Amino acid sequence: MTKPHRRSVISMLVVAIIFSFFAIISSQLQIYVPLDKNGPMMKDDYPDIKTKEESRIEKIDDILDNKYKNHMKSGDKHVHDVKKVNIQSKSELVRLENDHALESSETLLTHLYVHIPKTGGSSAFGLLLRLMGQGIFKNDATTKTPWKYRPCQQGTQTLTTFPSGFFTEFRKTPCNLWMTEDSIENSVKHSHAYTIIRLPEHHVVSQYFHCKEAERHKKKEKMPALDEWLDHHVNRMESKNITKANFSLPKPDKYNCYDPINLQSYMTDFDQHLSVSDLQSKFEVIGIMDQFEKSVCVISIRYTGFVTPQCDCTDQQRHRSLIRTDHGVQHHGATFNLTDDQHFKIAKLTQLDSLLYGRAALAFNNQVEEIEEEFNIVLCETPQLN
Image 1 (tube, one colour):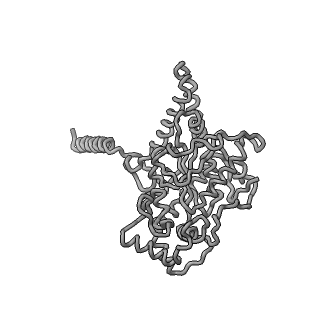
Image 2: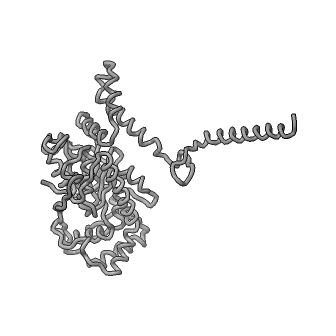
Image 3: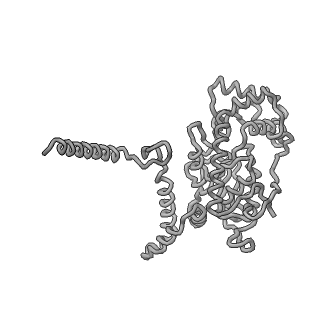
């Protein structure tokens, strides 16, 4: 064998050994094809690569196995296979889940609305009822049937007790969405969660004036000036190293008011490590109060699996805003003029909430685009009810 030929053989062997080595390493490390411009990533870096699809299929399997168990016992597997194949969208799946919840002997927490105080929850709840009051619209705007279920308002009921202490029906209509003022971290049973986030500065000011002016706030006459109230909470935060409000802690002040220290982050179980994608996984809809009416429409669609004509502006524009509840408050967070010092104090109290708001706005935009693509529609900015 000539020297050049021998070198060629040796080179080929070396290359083969190198490729074999990397094949073994790749299989052990579970290297996946690059998903973005950052290059190849490990499987663990993308825990949701298969999780969402697997979770969707498992959920369908569980529901269908229960829903069609009589057919399955008789050997009619075709029913199961056809149904599963046809379920391709979120809306189809949620309709199936809603039907399953009605048929179940258990009370299932299919839908949870995390009501963050002073983010339009009362108005959102009323609007959901008004949208559902229009009935189910199917192929056209004239064919509709009444709903078999409804959202139910639970006030401040803690989620740790579910279903104990929760309505199972209201006015003879079963509940399958519950709205309550409790942190999402206290729920381990819900399938879909919804909430609305407010611009943090407006949120804090709204909390203060609710306690200062609302008729139902029993200690409103004892509320101090805004600066004094803000100072109290800044001092609490700094002296006790408090990062978030916490309903399990003692009352934050003697005025029986809200705790403004990153209250929205507490209610959504948010921290700085949660990405936009994480928020979309945690909340089926995370709306923003700057787009309040659209947010409620998106919640309604993901809750029911249907689009009501009031939310669909594909062929027209609607501009009449919906009425919101003000609880008898004269001053509102979005219109009150703050001093520079007050701006600074509120920024301290809501640093985490500011991160949440920015990421929530991006997540909501993605959720809107997802619905518009799924239904081939353009959602209204300010829906009009008939």
